[in-house]
Amino acid sequence: MPVDTPPEPPVQSRPGSRRMALIGLLVVVVIVALIWGLPAWTYARSHEDTDDAFVDGDVVQIAPKVAGQVLRVHALDNQIVHKGDLLVEIDPADYQVAVQSAQANLDQAEEQERATRLNVRLTETTTGAGVQQAQAGVDEARGAVAASNAAVETARSQVDAANAAVQSSRARFTEAQQEVSTARRNAEQQVAAVHASVAEAQRTAEDLRRYQALFAQDAVSQQVLDQSRAAARVAHANLAAAQVRVASLQSQIAEKTANVGIQSEAVRQAEAQADTARTQVAEAQARSQQTRSTVGEAAARLANAESAPQQVAVSRQNVRTVSTNVQAAKAALDAAKLRLAYTRIVAPSDGRVTKKAIEAGQVVQVGQNMMALVSPDVWVTANFKETQLENMRKGAPVDIRVDAYPDQKFSGHVDSIQAGSGAAFSLLPPENATGNYVKVVQRVPVKIVFDSIPPDIVLGPGMSVVPYVSVR
Image (tube, rainbow, N blue to C red; front, side):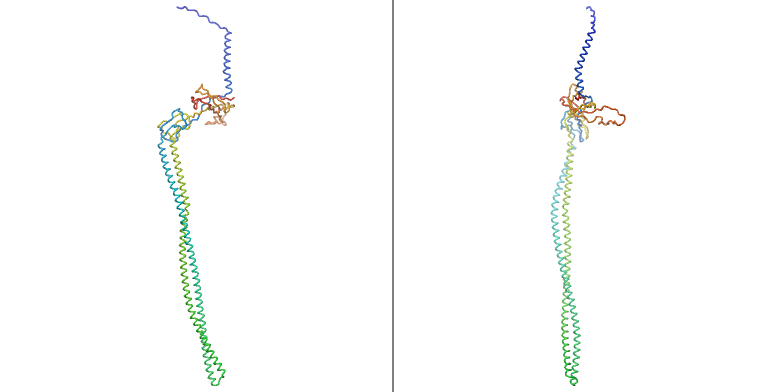
């Protein structure tokens, strides 16, 4: 059995040695503090930092532009996709039918356009020939009118000549009648003179017989008897001369009476010719009126033919209208094809798929969020106090600490400083002009861009970081 030995009494340290140990410890602490704290203090004086900072980046919400049932989903959560990669397929059957219908409408519109263009060419050809034919008809009708007018003028000249002939014949007839009347008056005067000569001859004959009887009785002288005989001879001679003049006047009366008959017949013939000329004038005027009607009809046909430009213009307007319909049909076809293309949803840019909320068989609506695509280009949005911005400049180097990677140090630089505090752009910005005012230090967003990110590091929007911006 072992024998218990009594414990040794404790060694009591001397007060002087404890003091030296404490001083030595303090010296060590001061040296360590100087070694670690001086650089930290120097770093803190030359840098501004904030814990109100987060990783930021472009987040694209993927939503369909057309409604329908999802056939296939090609993207997985957190999958890295590239621009143009197929993400989701929507059943295209309805949209393929719409494309076929739009294509049929386009074919119909193009066929109608071809028909209207052909109609324009046909109208131009037909109307051109119609104008020429109608113009020829007008010229021919106008020539006929000119000829009929000339015939009317000729007939009127003939009427005027016939009327002049009638007037001349009537004048000669009147003159002949006047000559007959004058001859008859002269004959009557000569007959009276004959009667006077007969009476004078009888008287002188009686006187001669009386003077012869008285001469036989020697009652008168020979001179008186001779004078009586001379007077009887003169009386008989005057009677004979008067009878001759009467016979001559009666012959003239017969001649002039015959001339009156001739002039009467001439008047009748002239009147008949005048009537014939008037009939010819009426017939020529009727023909002229008929040719004028023909001119009117030809002019109407010409006017109708000359409306060809309007008809062509209408046809061309129809072509433009149909062409517009063709353009509308093409636009409808393009829209249908575009909607069909929208059934294949592709990545608009490179990124990582997040928040996938779609599966095959679901019916989606336009604008429904199916997933988000986070861009690989990320940056830091650091909300510094406005008092920290005095020496902060664009391009200043930045040391970045990310909470998710505490042992990883990232480098970057200041890209830009927002022109205004974050509160000024909030939903309800402060209205300092009303109520009691309390001054609060504002924070201003600063965009910090990573210089490089290792490929095995995943950074996403919302991750907490602490940036250290060099300001000296």
